[in-house]
Image (cartoon, rainbow, N blue to C red):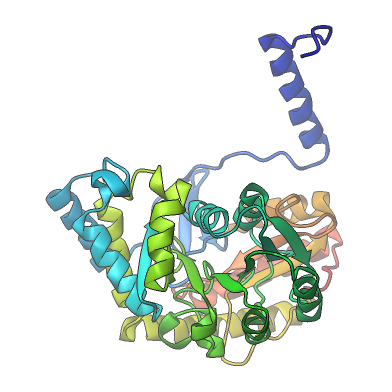
Length: 411
């Protein structure tokens, strides 16, 4: 240890942190918490006002669904407020087992494992399934949890350009000496609303003996037969080794899951450190997730997906009418995520503030969440939005763009 190096006092640490916060402020990148009131729904209360909510992942509008709330209340009365232990000690309760079985059946896999969050799930999967001597292949626009899982795995990480299957194949060829190969991709990319080219990726996984992990956080409940996600949409569920998804978006609860062959799930139970050393979900959350899953894969879920698709089509047409460039959806897969690329961060913040004043809660997304020069508004729709709320938001957006002199970039 170099004894000549100056030690930093607690006061020095604080000063350094304050300097970094000041730099974030000057770059328009400092963030803060916003306290909203009421349930997540098409409208919510913020700052003493009722606003149209276009910044929630409550895609099917199930967060306030009575049967899901009742299931949560009943489970709390029956099993208490907490899992109170990690799953391998005493935290794996009847509600968790029921949820795991339901998820495995939903995803057409042999078994499932439930995690405390999507971030924990991806850390668990990647660090357990890949290590020294292995190779991981990750899309350049994958979620931060995948990025961090890759970093922590100690495997050699190959980043391939967004959705570029040819580059992925070249990387797989170059990694021929790797002990194991793991391909990881979002199914639906959360900031862009586009789909991974799963058929091509599945073909490469088979050709090069790689395991394929698909993060279906934003696809579960939304696309594919019965809302089963991107694998079901493309008809390649058998080619997906591990289907990961979250319970806190379309399924309106909290936590995450991974569905796979029994051997893979058993291996994760023994090797996935974030799973092993975390307290299990409260039984009420597991019960609510089960109830949400029943709704999502049933007739009500189908009705809501159809309504959501119609609203997405209306919103897309409206965006084009006011000069916002948006891509066409894949056939039969309306994805309720619409990036409105402004590029300049200061202008993006100004537009978000204008919309807030106009009664629309639609926030700015800035680096490092998205790449430099691609700051945007990320509009997300719910099946319970009304056409009037869609139109009101489009009117406010058109007015804001004109007043601030903003020309959105390509999506």
